[in-house]
Amino acid sequence: METAISIKNLYKTFRKTVALDNVSFISKEGVNIILGPNGAGKSTFLRCIIGLYKPSSGSVSVFGKRPYFDDEIRDKMSLLSDNYALYDFLTVKQNLRFFGNLYKLKDNEIFSKSKNILKEMDALKFFDRKVVELSRGTKQKIAFCRAMLNDPDVLLLDEPTAFLDASSSEWIRNFILDYGKKRKTILFVTQKLDEVSRFNSRLIIMREGKIVEDTTTYYIYNDIMKSSSILIRFARPVAISVLKKAGYKFDSMESKEVSSAKFYINNYKDVNSLVGKLIKNKAFVLGIDYIEPLVERISKGG
Image 1 (cartoon, rainbow, N blue to C red):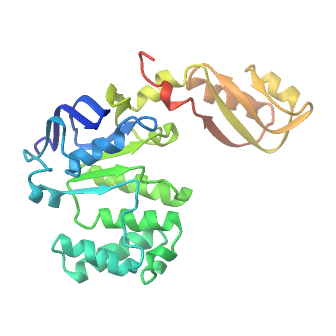
Image 2: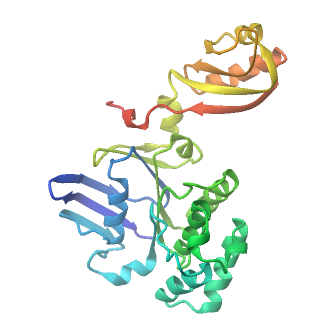
Image 3: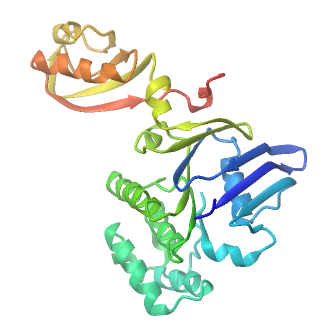
């Protein structure tokens, strides 16, 4: 399969504001994670790729075509934007039928495919409801379903798990991983380090309209978790004396017993060591929450 996306020296400006500054990028098959803070240019990047925005200069090519000028290439692409992009006063069924017909899909194919996806996300019960009546999370599920109707070769996802419950978020992540194995190209945009840590894939870090890192998700564990912290939750209260025996610095608001504590670690390997020592001292660990550093600070030069 040829390289799906090829971008050279892409600039995108809005009047005097530079949204993308000399961005060059070649996609890899499978999942490509794009991480960056608000205002990094991530959403603009996706919109240039799918052809919603015309580059101010530079070039965007998808399978050798220019999406802004060549409409037919969009049949092979799909975008889940940060706005769910559905018609509020149509039902879910009517929305999916409308968008599926744009891809020249037959109604029975549209409904069969969409019902399978919605059932997996526990949203099939809303099939005949108007979109305006739905919660933001449910709208996100419908929008994801819409994005998959044409079985795209290039799938562009802007915060696809936003507003979703944990179960639906996990289903979408697993779906994306499986979909990438079908020789598809996926760009997954996020500003959450916790989201990145759930993939083993290429990682692009953007800041201020530029790509500042082109690495892998292992970078998150190997470098970013240096001198970081985690919150450990316990199934039942643990004495402060037990926490001290673990040998790691910690913060706690209590003086005798705690139900959770913030520990400071040097690297990701310390997590196993710390938990092991707590368990050895009769603590019952219920869960571990990684406390994210500010994504704005992420880059090897930052």
